[in-house]
Amino acid sequence: NPRTGRVHTGYALAATTTGRLSSSEPNLQNIPIRTEEGRRIRRAFVAQPGTLLVSADYSQIELRLLAEIADIPTLRQAFRDGLDIHAMTASEMFGVPVEGMPSEVRRRAKAINFGIIYGISAFGLANQLGIPREEAGLYIRRYFERFPGIRAYMDETRSYCREHGYVTTLFGRRCHYPDIAASNPSVRAFNERAAINARLQGTAADIIRRAMIRMEPALAAAQLSARMLLQVHDELVFEVPEAEVEATLPVIRDVMEQASLPAVALSVPLKVDARAAANWDEAH
Image (cartoon, rainbow, N blue to C red):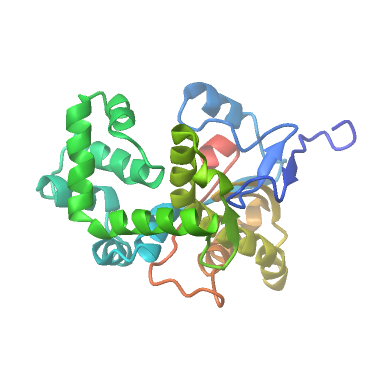
């Protein structure tokens, strides 16, 4: 922008079925974090002199909501106890002790945990892990055997959406999927996967919007001058005077972690990781 010297994105509030915000001109929600090129781009986003960027990110919010909505006692308790959820899943599935667990075993459980949310197939998991499709299929079957409530949640959500054409978030907002009744099997399957994920992703979207609404009054009440710059799905980015960073971080965490209340009291705690740095890559 020639007047401000900054990059300004635009947000659409109602452009996605799940309720997530979408960013454009430019899309600042789509800069990779796991590639070196993406990290180099993020390093170009810097704080003004005298300030730092703070990145506050919900930790594994969709997995936490899966434990909540699907009512999985072992996952719920693991999150309450602050356990490594991927190591715990690996231990449950493969009978490997958490202590001294090989990183490859944990990596496979992590891929399954996140893949299940998005309806990953044996073919997709096999490609992701570089293993035979038969082995990937065995992992998925074993996962559902260990956590039958997740299979029940998926079946119930699929059935409800077929009957009504929508699913609801924990806050009662509807996410519509009329094509779940399409005659084309590929279209139907895509909408089934999307509906299963929408209850999780949509609830997460509701929670972070509630946090955004409450953030400015909370910062003002604490006499802090941090400014919210950006929302990237489960992450909020702020510009904070260096002298106020220590006081600002707990306010941001508290607002985000308590955002579902009082409308929805979760049995699984939300956790926010927040860091301050001179550029966006180092803050994340």
